[in-house]
Length: 62
Image (tube, rainbow, N blue to C red; front, side):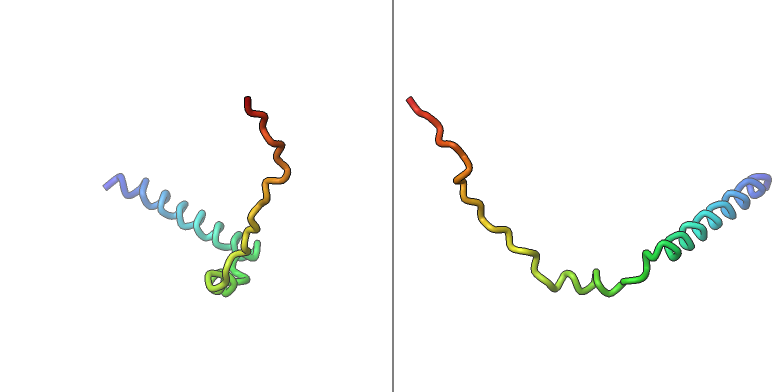
């Protein structure tokens, strides 16, 4: 029964930490644009242009 005197303050501390993190996320505008991430999967990524290896010097073979 004495363990409950330890667990209740620990649980209240966890709740306070979670609420503080939530309000920090709201304050730092983490939840402002929820639609962009859900739509971004529909668009293709930029195409990577194939590189021409013209910058490389030819190697000398014997």
